[in-house]
Amino acid sequence: VPTKFAMGDGGSATNGTWLKIKNGGNLTLGPTNGWNAIGYNRPATVTVEKGGKVTSQARVMVGRAGVAAGMPSSLIVDGGTFEITTGSLQMSESTGWGQLFVDKGGLVDLKASNITNSGNKMLIDVRYGKIIASGNRVANYDTWKNSVPAQLVAYGGKGTLVYDYNVTNAGKTTLWAISPMQPAPENGSLVAVPIGSTAPVDLSWKNMDPNKPGDPVYVDVWFGTDPNKLNPLTYTKVVSAQNQTTVQVNAPAVGGITRYYWQVDSYIYGSPTG
Image (cartoon, rainbow, N blue to C red; front, side):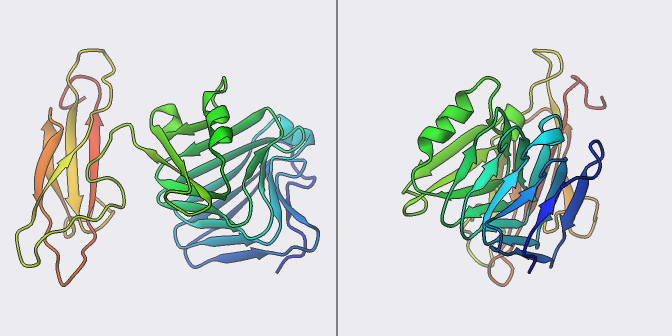
């Protein structure tokens, strides 16, 4: 367990330093110094992919000071888990510039504290994932969401933020986001179907805005049991270059719970081939 973790403590002022925690990787940061840093005084980036996990036993600063004020330091929770057991997640500490991105089912779990922001340059972008913080943080999230420019956004500013206190998790504030395409069933949802039936399930979504207002938006829709749409054994194109927002698919439960994936590819230039 590192007794001190300080990425971007000196070093390059332009390229920064990078660390990626991949599937099966675990990094535990000790409490010895009372803090850990991603971008201490130079830019740095930590990415936690699906199946990876970072646990800090002390507060974590993302973007602290010095040259880091002119370039962002980033924590990218890209399907993995980032948790702090003691202390807060301090964004844009001092004169720094910190960014937090949560996607692909990623989880930021602040077990005993919350997110703080002491600088002006902060961005938190929540996509498909969650942030769980201790206590009531609704007022903070309201302030960051309504700031100009916004410091808390969903799907790059195109989605909808959702957060509650003491509802989803007792004594905690839970934050997640709805995609601007409003998929139904939504990400991670559970659909009950009779075992052994063909199990027709309706998929629906809101199309992206066309490049030219008023133009149709054509889509390809992929559906299967593997997130890799290019695998013909597990994925099928159920809609090909059509202007529509719904499709019915067969999603039988095979031997219990079966996980399905679907994806919509949009042609925003008013043409089924554009």
